[in-house]
Amino acid sequence: MPNRTVQEERLRQRFALYDTDGDGRVERGDLEQEARRIVHAFGESEDSPKAQALLHAYPHMWDHMTKTAGVGAGQGLSLEQFVQIANTQMLDQGRAGFGHMLRPSIRAMVDLCDVDGDGQVSPEEFRKWLGAIGNDRIDADAAFRAMDADRNGKLSVEEIVAAVGEYHNGELDAPLLGV
Ligand SMILES: [Ca+2]
Ligand SMILES: [Ca+2]
Ligand SMILES: [Ca+2]
Image (cartoon, rainbow, N blue to C red):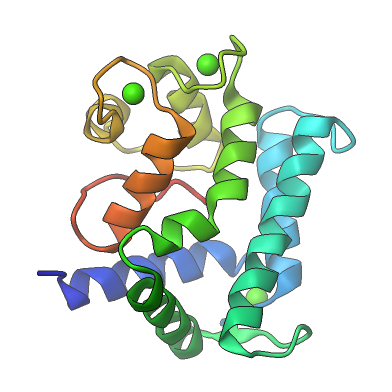
């Protein structure tokens, strides 16, 4: 049984993360800025292919969300609108719906922190990820274990997509991953 209170609290956290200029509304520009901040935190040049993937994926995810909700492209969302839209999309698309919307951003984040180039995230690379999104106070190893569904010591894109969906459904205690 999904816990609505936990779900809403987590959406609030996501909203606060996205609202980079802190004006109480999330706009496309907030997402562009957040993507740029992450790219810089990884020490990546903005014109590298990996950086470009994230710089495109973030606003694109926003466009998808607002388009699905029938909100005009230039409009920002209030917290209430954001929570309502996200809840509707999760209900309509099932538990993994939210995660799937985030897949291109998750893919781009995996590529940015993938130092050894195996397409997956090692515990070390995961710490780098958390550092880049400024969430380095949590127990990274415990979070990693919780997300590593097949327990092979690496996080695949699919495992991360599933974890984000479960997190927002209140089923998994993992950190907010910044995507
Ligand atoms: Ca804003
Ligand atoms: Ca890797
Ligand atoms: Ca795994």
